[in-house]
Each structure stands twice: as C-alpha cells, then as structure tokens.
Image (cartoon, rainbow, N blue to C red; front, side, top):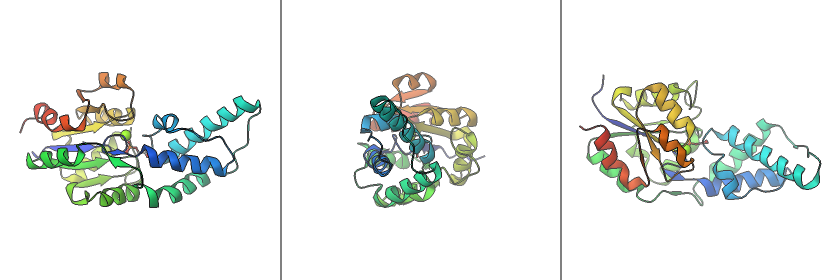
Amino acid sequence: MSALRLAVFDMDGTLLDSLPDLAECCREILAQCGLPLLSDTQVRGMIGNGVQALVERALHASVEQKAKESGTAPAILFSTEEAVSRFMAAYTPRATRLSRLFPGTEEALRRLRAQGWLLAVCTNKPEKAARRILADFELTSVFAAVGGGDSFAARKPDARHLLGTIAQAGGSAASSVMVGDMPPDYLAAEGADCPFVFAGWGYGAPELASRAKASAPCMQDIPPLLEQLMPA
Ligand SMILES: O=C(O)COP(=O)(O)O
Ligand SMILES: [Mg+2]
C-alpha cells in the first residue's frame, strides 16, 4: 500500500468553470434541432454525469419548454447518439475558449504538490477532451493520472472509476481524498471509502455539503483543509 497522499479532483465545476463553453455547445445542438435555446443557468445543474446525460437533459428541457409554449411536443431531429457526436465535434476544439480555471486553482495545486501530495483528475468528461484542457492550461505534468468518463469500464458514480484513477496515480484508497461538486463525486468517494470534500464554488446544490467529510467555499481553502483531514 502506498503511503503517498493523493488528492483526486473532479474537473467540471471543481477545477474548471466549463459552463460557458458547455452551454454554448448545448445551444448549438438545440439550434440545429430548431429547439428553444437554454441559458447558462439552465445548463449549470445538468453538468457532471457525462456528455450523454448533459445532451439528453438539455434536449429534454428544451423540448418541454417548446411544448409549454406551443402546446405540442416537438420532434427531435436526430438520435441521442448523433446529438452527442455533434456535441463533441463542437466542444472538443473549443473547450477552453471561454472556460477558465476557478480562481486560485494553480496556486492550490502547486501548494499541495509542495506539501508532498500526488494529484489526479477523475472526470466524467471523455479522457481526450480532459487531457486537451489540462494541456491548454499547462497542467499536464501536475497530475499523476487522468481518469476520464471513457477511461474505465465504469464511470462516476461507480467507485471503479475513482479506484482506477487512484491505482493509475500510484496511490491507495486509504490515503486518497476526492474533491468534487456533484452527487456522482460523493457517491464514487463513498463507494471507494475515500473522504469526500465538497467544492462549494462549483455547480452542485449547497445541501451536498451534508454528504461531505468537509467542504470549502473556495479553492484557496483546499490545501490547508486536506492537510487537516489527512496529516502527513
Ligand atoms: O459531466 C461531465 O461531462 C464532466 O463532469 P465532471 O468533470 O464534473 O465529472
Ligand atoms: Mg463536477
């Protein structure tokens, strides 16, 4: 068993404020379907269960909106599979056009590394897109592992996604902490028996804090909090 402490971060809503680009791409797909567009606020709570869930939720909400306005349910022009592939074609090349790391992220990661923590990413975003985003922000070398939504046989909320990421980073569940903003994050952490830290600055409802070992209002608070939870 490794004695190295490992901090595993979710990506969307935890490291990265990805909402502006994800919402733009949702609107692009909805426009192609002739459906009403959704606001960033509407899209915000749909992020965190992977691309397919995001696209399905956006289509569903928009269809409902149109049905309410016109009194008839509109037809969706293409299959979910086609919508997801169109979404990824739009998103992959522009994932960091408007998205930004949350304030204090680079400094918090630097401090954790200086304190001897290994770092990893466990995201439901496809691995290729996640790696490209990390490269755009010059963070590739900071992380010992990147577990994407398609990297393993299962993804969050399934604990195997988190356990696989921990194994790839060379850590162990007993000395790992999961930092995330949504139910799939705490469910994976619960299943892997890792403490869960709620990212209060992300897209999750504040009530999720009650499922966490600890919560933080901003990224700057993460290094001291993790040190406190898991002293060297
Ligand atoms: O749902 C997604 O595509 C990604 O979300 P996550 O980075 O919060 O896991
Ligand atoms: Mg998230």
